[in-house]
Image 1 (tube, rainbow, N blue to C red):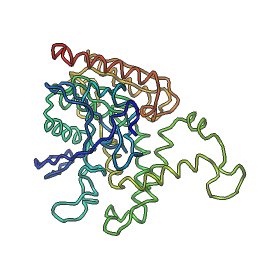
Image 2 (image 1 turned 30 degrees about the vertical axis):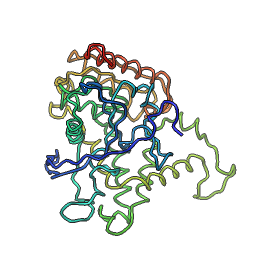
Image 3 (image 1 turned 45 degrees about the vertical axis):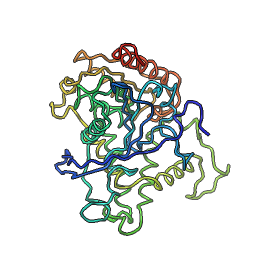
Image 4 (image 1 turned 90 degrees about the vertical axis):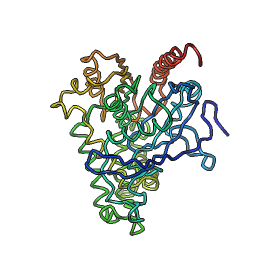
Length: 385
């Protein structure tokens, strides 16, 4: 049964590109596929399109559900749909699974055209810049010259920022949520610990575990458990789990005793069933590599001088992994270039994951900003819907 405000049953699509893609790492993908979904209707002049960029473990399945899997609800379903902040009554919304992914786009688990076997460890490293280039080709394929907006949280916010630098004339608005202009040293450290958990798993086999009929389940579980700890705030974890025990008594063992242990193991197990280990390594490296100011001797203001879009930058007070101070770095760089930017620091207790959750102030802010974007689209069409 379709819930009110849902885009309903959706069908994923696949776009195949035979034009080679030159990657930042120096290698070339001769051809590739991108899995994507769309919601809403593209207006006659294709001016109402919004691209939603996913974070580390996200996919193209942004909203709605599948006919054969009604429990598989889009990862931002609370944000995207008719009457929701990203209103599909007004916008044509696009979700894409990035290159290197494991949910339909070409990635390490895809079959290499020359060998007939999975790419495995041979799949090249990809960057945020590469993702944006591939997304731009998909946008071209859909007949869209200029995006009304690009938005995303965390790694998705970095992609939104990169869109304004790589294609300044093709983006009207960018919504950069819970993101940073580059990772801190600590964040790179967290990513490396997660990667080491995977690559030291005996079932990893140098990234070619497919040929052995196994997956590095233990490594993936540990990587996800570590990630979940950093995505939540201390207060949020305490409120949700406290020091509650599973059985209410000491066991004096290494078995699960505390509720938080049970939760982390559950999340780790679930993640290891649905996510590819090589994709996790590639995605975390893309996070590490992103730094638009690197080519400008670390001067973020100079790097952002290429942008022409209007911006909404949002952060969350309890987010210690992508703290508000990092968002304010972006805001300063934009203001230094006299670019239109609105900034909101939202008081939310959930930590980094707050951008995925229901929060009235946050959702109302996104809705209000995009209402202005919708009004601009309508004005350009002479008042026509």
